[in-house]
Amino acid sequence: MGHFPDDTVGKPALSSLMRLFQCVRWVAALGWLVAAGSVFGGGGGGVPALVSEALFPPEARHNHASCIVEAADGTLFVAWFNGSGERQADDVKLQASRRRSGARAWEPRFTLWDTPGFPDCNPSLHVDGQGRLWLFHAVVLANTWESTLLQARVSGRWRLRGAVRWDGMQSVLLAPGEEFLQILEGHLPRLQAEAARPDLSLKERQEVTEFIEGIHLGATNRLYRRLGWMPRAHLTTVGGRWMLPLYHDGYSVSMVALSDDQGRTWRPSSPLVGLGNVQPSLTVRRDGTVVAWMRDNGPPPHRLLRAESYDRGETWTPAVDSGIPNPGSGAEVRVLRSGEWIFIGNDCESGRHSLAVWISEDEGETWPIRRQLAGAAPGQGSFSYPSLLESRDGGLHATWSEALGGRETIRHARFNRAWVRASVPAP
Image (cartoon, rainbow, N blue to C red):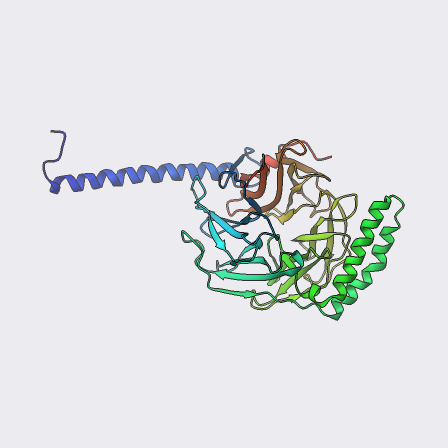
């Protein structure tokens, strides 16, 4: 026999076989999801696990400054900028990729946004309470960071395959006023005292003096105060308020854009002022204190800089050194549902050859647990500008810029708290 003599018999039988095959595939996929969830999800216990992969094959073009978010259905979404350079290259655009819940690979990347003839940089993503995707990014008008115009876009249809269809877009215009100026000027005597530190070399004192001159210029130049604000890390919410951390690379001052109407309108906070504090990442303590952790572009010792706000981001304490090393590179700190805080960044004072994860059990006062996530010999690789997410199943996801042998990609890693804890305590 070996075959069906007519279609009236063959089609139902074939349909049954197809349904059986689909059922087997569904059961297999479900088993993989359950196994993955049991390994990566849950609390700090369990089996230590780490899986990482590149989102796309390494290439000669520059791929940098990624940000990762998760949809309600478990879809992961990552954005970054891609081009022949950064601010100086007009072909720079934003790219993105998705990974569906249960999928074993990332979907092909696509253009998330491209302003023709202008570099688009530093995407920051946020998923709001309605499940919509917000994209904040920098459009560089005149190939200098000081000429950046901050843009916001929103989409309710971002989980579909292919390019994102945007529902609305606007420029986020911020006009820091006289109070902002007065606060900046009020910090100058404290910073000038830093220039007289006996442990600084002549070169380092000159560097401090240049920072002070830059802050004075930024304070007195209205264009500097209104343009040049760029995002980097995730938006944070507290008490219904949106807090979008921003920084100005022209004079190394940070600020938080505040919105009390879910992104419809924005206003500036007071400045966060130190010596080279940029690219803030925000965390919120149980008592409501907001803590900003910032890249250190200033003189040594190179440490992540920290400032605090006791009024939901309106005003800030002076930026001071924390105990976390930072080589002048982006970092992120997030609050986990367990109450622990987790830091990801370069755990060295020079170079970007080591990327590590730290855990704090006392809301950032101490960081006793550390494990390297990626590393190479100094000068042999770069792993930088990480973004961090705790997914709904309790797993941890990180993306970062990876450069090896003159080729670059965006790498994603999924791991759990047990993996971080299965390391020797940090010194």
